Length: 456
Image (cartoon, rainbow, N blue to C red):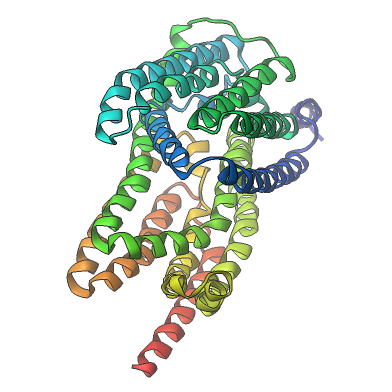
């Protein structure tokens, strides 16, 4: 073995030891923590909902739904990708870079809170809920607290050391839920939800500084770091804005086309069809994106091989779940819900056909960002929104409500060629993995429509 190669191996071993093992082992541990944390979070959420719905009046949850939507919207519309930049950038462990990022994060949290204070009277008038004028500024303090959270969590995410992070997030959320239930028992108003949320946010911020390893954050500003952060973040900002439009804008369009009743059925079916992909997205963001970034920095020649294995891990279960929904979605929904929701089963079967190809294309998530190609990723997202809007308009024009639902499933089929082309340009399209699933998907859809045609 040559001296240069031996040195490279030694450096890799030192790096692996410092980060807690090889990339493969860290990825497996991070995946386990991510999935386990998500399932535990959902269990706590379900249990708390069952208790809180018995303690509080429904209007309290409606008011908090408005508050959460506004806060999420402002967070997305001011997002400059601080955590992804720490994960992706070669300087992601440099104190000057990280502290500049923390300063920007704190400023973002403050700006969100100021915006909420300014919007509070307007939204209170718009929704005819005077209490919003008081609730929004107080609930918005969680944005300030979040902005002061330690970047050591982002550095841990970069290193795929997610055990401490998941524990902090889950523990602070659970304690916040306990506080919310106790407050709701004492004061059965929306303020129990507000103060309980603030307690959870405070515990998370405090724990991120006290119970994580690494250098303490301090306010700092380095122009070169800021330039790199803004260079990466300008397209993250556009991407986050488009994500907001793709989610909330899509709901508004669907509501306009389908009406309230059909929208409720569609939302139920859509939530079910996306259940697996919520976990897959979490894995993409928390595990695969950091892993891809590390490989892109240190061993770019292995990125294709590693991403292929990761994508297989997502595609196989996702495709099988989609197939189940296509074949038995109506039976499944009729088992879970009463006759009033029967229409959601047929919608789930149609959405399942979209998911057959959706899991293939979406499994490329994280690769473009890992290579710093946020602009390209944003353009693809923009095309997705364009396809969604045009598809709904055309579908509604020719087939009415059924056309709108079909267009929602067709989006992923039309988007996949774009995703394949983009990744082929950088040598990361994997036809040997994709094409067998694409062919099977075509066969499944052909059988579905063949049966539907035979019943006509």
